[in-house]
Amino acid sequence: MLTSGKAVKVTLYLSDGAKHHGVPVYTSVLDYLFHSGIAGATVLKGVAGFGAKHRMHSAHLLDISDHLPIKVEFIETREKVDAILPELQRRTGSGLIELQETTVVVPAKS
Image 1 (cartoon, one colour):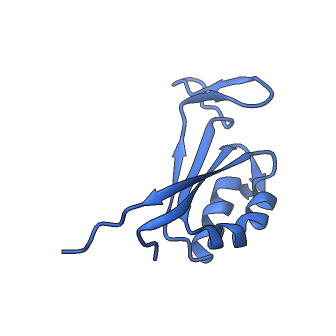
Image 2 (cartoon, rainbow, N blue to C red):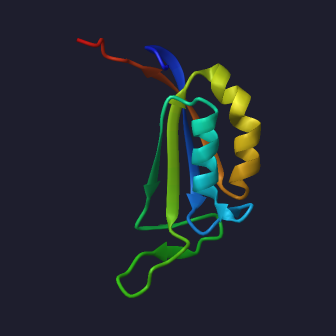
Image 3 (cartoon, rainbow, N blue to C red):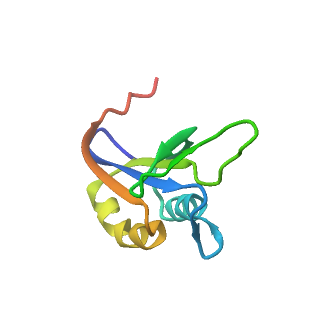
């Protein structure tokens, strides 16, 4: 369980069309984070965006794209992040991983 104090926010930038061993990368990453004991993670799907190749992708009613941006975020201790980072890099493939030092405040339970 994550406690108040210093932590690392990890953000993975992916494409919803990207696959890892035949399954969507974000699904593979989320499953790995869950089984690695990460405190929690969120997957967000964008409605538009572009990546390193500068190709615009957007969702329209008549044109559902499989290249929309996906963002996976989680916050964890530096030690846990360092331990899982090599596998995240393997699973992410051509995506991007951002690490950001942060401070977490976990409210006291009443």
